[in-house]
Image: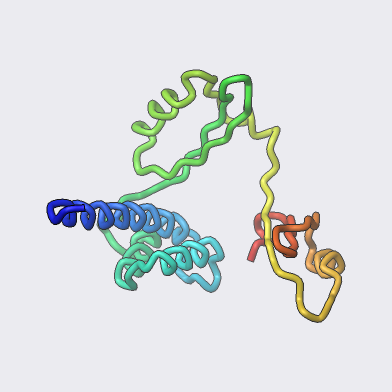
Length: 175
């Protein structure tokens, strides 16, 4: 790789990081609508942890939380929109989008569902259940994970990868 390609390589890395930060900022803004305190808002806490793993600066993180909570005036209002439909061969699909303009997103979704069929609200969701999942390693004390799951209110227990256990719960109990 010659010297002429070095700036281009750095620019590509910076562009990828910028796209990731934009995606994480939008997720933080949506999550912050439920409350600006990560201690009381599990969705915000998860988004903040993901942003910290990606090395997002504290200033950018705090600005995204303030925008989402409505504390700044220049905030673009992002909202979650759900589209339901069928992919080719009648495979049911639910797509959750994060958008600031529904009128721009709807035609894009119609294009994606061109080979299948874009359905109305409720046309596919009856076939799906919204569940929460928690994956944890068993404690060293040898306690039975199924007993712990029953006490904690889990609906189902599955064996995960590398000896871990996956607990299936209601989405509101994933905290």
